[in-house]
Length: 220
Image (cartoon, rainbow, N blue to C red):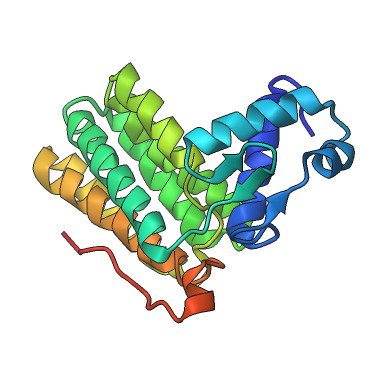
């Protein structure tokens, strides 16, 4: 585990464990076991629990401990909807600022997503694509908010959705190249919504235990 920011490293580990089902809805998080497993003191563990509670991923009950939130599908979809709205706004802002070199970098990232078979490399290319657009928004506030939202949504659930993601990215690039900010923003919003709808099909959620149905975000 990297050491520069222990709290964030712990939070990232717990998020991943929650979204992959290693930590299940309603399960108590044993902070002593977690500290031992990650070879850390209790301090960064406690700080990470505070941060994760602010994100709505866990709930802490006095004298009982910290528990994974009982997520329903709509909880995750609501977060993706907010993420979609902010991502769309950043994309609209970026339309007027992207250089030819940055557009070329966007296409290179999409090419890598389409051709590379390594899921980790595809995720890296996907992150690079969105980072280029977010930086081009030239809004530190939007970038901060997008970073916060991105850290709290599931990752690694594209699987069969890579083809769709590539298609979505190409559509976004086309609108950006034509300087159509509104169309680019709407294409980004639809893309993030589709990602959320795809993700909840694979996530271990509380709905699975009580017969909940699969919700879907509106297409926009």
